[in-house]
Image (cartoon, rainbow, N blue to C red; front, side, top):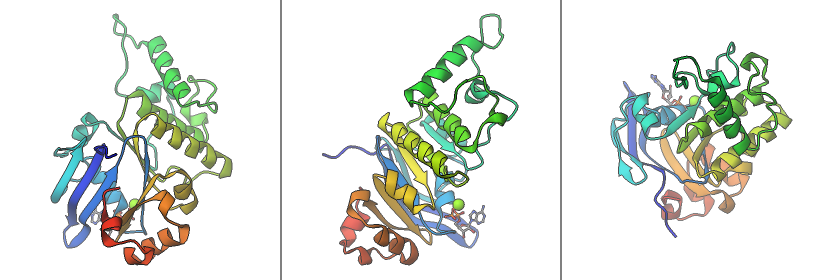
Length: 260
Ligand SMILES: Nc1ncnc2c1ncn2[C@@H]1O[C@H](COP(=O)(O)OP(=O)(O)O)[C@@H](O)[C@H]1O
Ligand SMILES: [Mg+2]
């Protein structure tokens, strides 16, 4: 059965002056799946995420959303297409509570033009509950008082609240301990189970192997391969990251380059 991917990149190029950050990159992200995006430092992961998010404009190639090519010239275009990026630094406001952060810039107002705190709190709580979040006791807690894992939870629940179709998480567990990492990875799976196409940028091979359905490897700005998680070993993924050669997998070039 072939389903149209929620997001597909075809032949994407992006240069910064003389630096060719991305060359002919292909990527597929499907609804209900976690697609890991891996690669060494400088491979082009952040550039790719910024191209999807409209922070950079691609030089060539296509971005297809549900099978249709769209130009993404600015972050607003990406937002309209249902893309939410959870940046590594999260950009949450410490002086606001969980509800305030989830509705920042998109607040609900009452007919008297005051903040409709009740409706916002109810919707925030629903988003948290839909992800079975048990780590945040009160949606009225100030974000300043939350742990790193709880902050990730707020950022992910925000993506659910706004019905994002594509959620890109940039190194969500980089600053977390073991228990919090496990909680955030569970959340990433539940996000995918809601039908979201999740893209997980990660350096952590354990995380990737644990939650990904598909793994896309960038090597020096090129797509080394995109493979199904179930069909590769950790050694093979590491080899792809360090050599960029899909031949080492024992996969045929079409398999390695196929839209998985
Ligand atoms: N804004 C920029 N201006 C110039 N060069 C950049 C810029 N952003 C990234 N690069 C270059 O593009 C390449 C890919 O970088 P990046 O996407 O950050 O890789 P990764 O996130 O995989 O570590 C690197 O050579 C980097 O120096
Ligand atoms: Mg990066």
